[in-house]
Length: 213
Image (tube, rainbow, N blue to C red; front, top):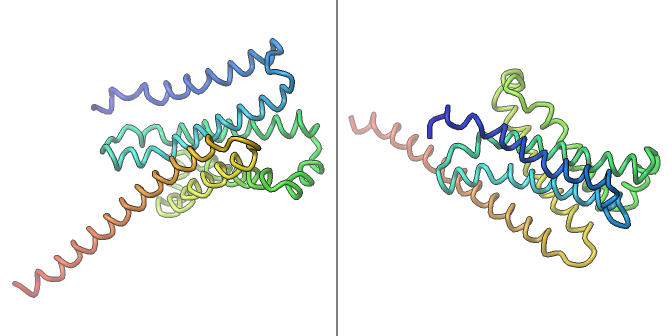
């Protein structure tokens, strides 16, 4: 598929991402978020963050499985949507749940493990969001930029763990996300192992050629 034919992908992702945010805002304005609107908004923004982050982490496995290049073009946009969702999730928690009391947030983080884990995931997301531009790649150098953005893997694990600990009864959903990420990580590891093996084979062939000449 020609590159010029895919220019609509990222705008389409952004437009699609705005729909659930607009729906939550509309329901909030109409007082339709249930008996506990703060908890509903928290849960929905948190779930959106996990969905977008999981989708961004699935882009490389899709490339590995199907040899498609287009998922790599939307990976950054999905990751930024995930960060924005997580920021909204935290903002609702800070402003509406804790009344903008930083002391209350610190106490909550120290007292409740699932909040500490979620807060850790958000903190790790910040440098990834700040260095998501092409200019950042040029400034940091690709090797350092790539090493920094490998934080996406532990962030995914922290996000799923946060969701698992947050759910009190049925853990089906968080376990499905955990399975999805596990399969994706396994595919990444297999692809990396294959690349290393191919490099060793090529290096071996190069060293053997002078001896056979």
